[in-house]
Length: 112
Image 1 (cartoon, one colour):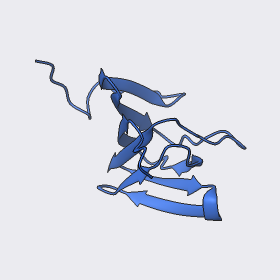
Image 2 (cartoon, rainbow, N blue to C red):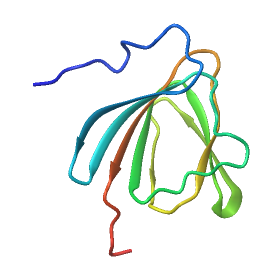
Image 3 (cartoon, rainbow, N blue to C red):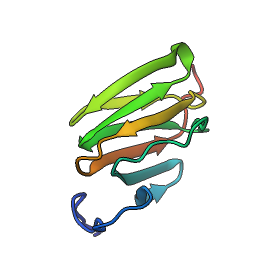
C-alpha cells in the first residue's frame, strides 16, 4: 500500500512547477502539480492525446482555452474536464502561496 499527503514534500523554493506522478497504469495517470506564480510560456498551448480531469485543491489559477478564447478562473475545490485535443494553457497561478492541482489523465472517449 502506498500512502502520501498532497501538502507535504514541497520544496521551499520552486523555480519551476513541481510535477509528481502519484499513480500510473494502463491508460491512466494521476499527478500532483504544484505551482507558485507559474504560467505557461507565451504562445505555448497544451494539446494532449488523453482527456484530463483536474481539481484545484489549493490556491487559485486561470486556465485559458483557445476555442472561444475562454478564461476559467479556478478557486479551491473547482474541477474541470479537458477533452483530448482541446488546446489550453495556464494563464496564471497565485504567487501568494502554493497552487496544488490533482490531474487525472485518462483515455479519451472515442464515442464523441
